[in-house]
Length: 320
Image: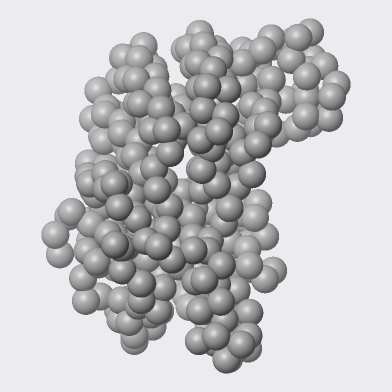
């Protein structure tokens, strides 16, 4: 099996589908006999698949535990929605567990959290994390979700000192940046300036905020990845780290998203250089269809069906 499955390097083309979120939701519900959720029989099959054990890094793992421990409460109902992004994500990546070149794979992966004396732990979960011999990849995957970026505010805790920074509840934070950033002196030095720069971009592209791009969530992910790098310096040295925001065909690039991408990649080079690590980092946006097209004729995790057969319903519509 070619190793390219864990190292996509294409960028979003300047084309996108004419299908809308509403249209694809209506189509999927219609194809499911008018029901918004999959059948009880299908739910049982997914529970069985999610509960199937797999071994990575010499540990016995189960995907179901990862979803249950995630912050999104996905298995309560979201996962079983006919247009569930978490279920599509599971199908698109879980089959990779069978590849020898994949050393580890998890869903709802916990990134290191920010410490807070106000009991507000500002952490984030990555939809997918997988590790190969020379690569570590983080995936944030979107399908029909829409984000309201109007009047978005980046929390003070990411860039302001105590006495100035307020919690999301409106009270002043009692902890300084060094404490909040888990003693990461390099992040304390560089991250506040990066955030101030991102805030300028948010204000600059006020009218251009596309509803697929969640800038506040991406800031949390970048902070988490920076903390992950700092915490795992020996483990990750000499590796390539990738962070991909995977979106569906009906989304087009926005100026805010492209500006964010440029600033993130510039910031991360500076951050890695300051840590004196021999690693590379790239942040990019990917189309879900392109990843789907590159999936080989592999069986889905815990199933006799092919991955592409399960996913085909989501890709009926072609890009223009």
